[in-house]
Amino acid sequence: MKEILKFLIEAGKLKKIPRTGFVWLGIKNPETIAGHIFRVAFMNWILAVSAKTKLNTKRIIQISLSHDLCEVYAGDITPYWGLLPEDKEERQKILKRWIRLSKKEKEERNKKKFNKEKTALEKLIKILPSAVAREIMKSWLEYERMQTKEGRFVKQGDKIETLLQALEYWGAKPNTPVMGWWEEIENLVDDPSLVTFLDEVEKRFYRQTRISHLEFRRLTPGKKERERMDKELEFILQIGKLKKMPRTGWVLRGIKDPETIAESSFITAIAAWVLCPRGKLILEKVLKMSLVLEICELYGGDMTPYQGILSRDREKNKQIIKRWPRFSKKEKEKRFLADYRLEKKGLEELTINLPKTLRREIIDLWDEAKTRRTPEGRFVNQTYLLTAYLQALQYFEKNKNFPIIAWYEQMREFIYEPELLELMKEMEKKFLPAGISA
Figure 1 (cartoon, one colour):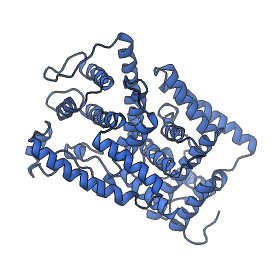
Figure 2 (cartoon, one colour):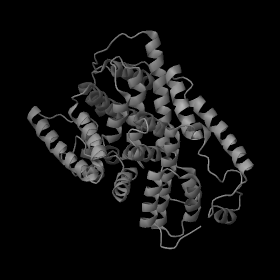
Figure 3 (spheres, one colour):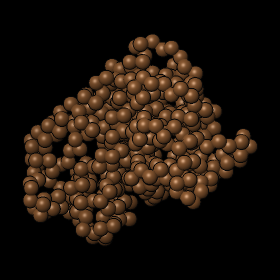
Figure 4 (cartoon, one colour):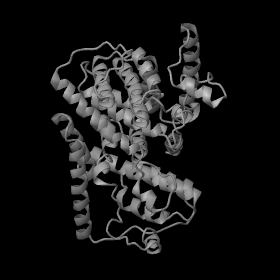
């Protein structure tokens, strides 16, 4: 467990690494790599379900989650790596268009990038159990080499998600860097379903106006397919807001630049993948639950155990959040039910326009994890709490005034899976001073 803890700490660094391209282009507080991975995984799952080609959704999610893990050590290497001038204005001009290189130069640069990232990923996963390490490496190689239909789909979906983020930053205004992403996508995307999805993206942001010089291999899908994709696009845009939505618990405790809900969901999914006991639990359900568990907070709010007991007196609140709140069994049940209803209502509102089967699957997965009524639900719920505890311990390491005792008490009430208890002990051994107790 000591090695798994080290892996999670290292992978968690992606929650603080901004995406290079957006930094170069002057975006203030751009999305992190972890936030990007979260939406790539969710988006590719949603689009894979209705793709014209039959796809393995578990593999789609695994490939999506693994595709940028190497950037913990390799950094976020963009296509402009090593080609930009020092002059800021000249750099901005180049970044507005897709980089054009000879075939030979492309091959050489891609080979260097591949080798650097593969070495970085090997360094990251070498401490994991061999079976899990092989899964992650296999997933990453499928993405990089695009030798499977799932690998090709995720590679194309990754680029589309970045285009969406660029459009969310700059909109459809002329003379912006967005055109560079359109040009890159024109050279890459050929999956029929993703081509149709791009048509809907274009319609949404450009108000029916075609980008004249882009020539996609356009199809003529039926009206129902276009309506479905437009609704899926709306859902994908909505969950993208979780990249900027800070977790309420960290805000209450005065954390500057706190972890977002998207970043939290990313590390929960990674931890669940690594810790999932094979043969006992269904891994695909575990991964999907990890992605789904917190999305209700977009509309339902990020509820904390202190809901309804905090006042406007900041000093008094500081004392309250130092300890885990104690309630009677009856009061706990009442508060859980109120929280459950509010979050479920938010989830139903968020998913209302998704296809019925997909919507039902998302709501059922969330319900299993929230109520802990299945083995997978209990495991994911505890994994989520444990990754939050890990983040709390890291905040405590930086600031010994952070109220860690509340988290210490909470974990003893909710964590009981043997593997997770073992990891929790390793976490406390690393971060807590000897002799700490409730």
